[in-house]
Image 1 (cartoon, rainbow, N blue to C red):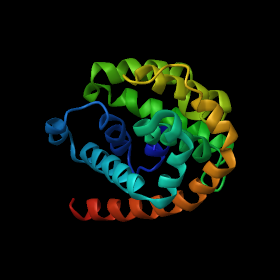
Image 2 (tube, rainbow, N blue to C red):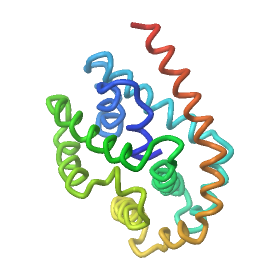
Image 3 (cartoon, rainbow, N blue to C red):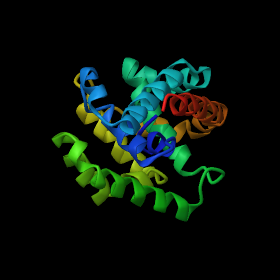
Image 4 (cartoon, rainbow, N blue to C red):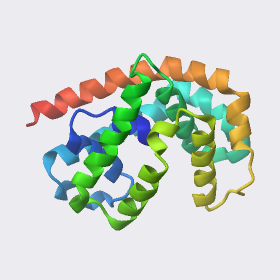
Length: 197
């Protein structure tokens, strides 16, 4: 799952922050944050573990694996955000806009906890409204291009976005089979986290 899904599958502002921090901090630092941020880090990990083991995600990876092999999961994560952003059973169009603005606002409010590289990314994310624009093909194209540029062993002209467009129906079906299961799993994890408080 990518930034939109991770931020949506939260139950507090602190958890939003933790969901973002997970990709930017060493494991040893995870317990140095307030409990609600730690819970967000835990949720992020639970989401990633569940996602990696789900049969529908294994199917979705087949769309990208001939092109990018072991990096296929990263491109599935980006693709899933497109379907989350266009899932109006989860949120309305206005609701997704409000969600995006809330996430940027919360991250600014908790800026004291953010490492410099996350702060720099937040500026770009907010400027181009990444979260809201995942609903558009061009938003996914932009995000996939970013993944290609960051990957050490991939050429930047690999046609992953074209594969996304050509296999959108297959990926939509994988999303339909996967996301309700993920949502139920995350609610269960959060219930356990609240019992720890």
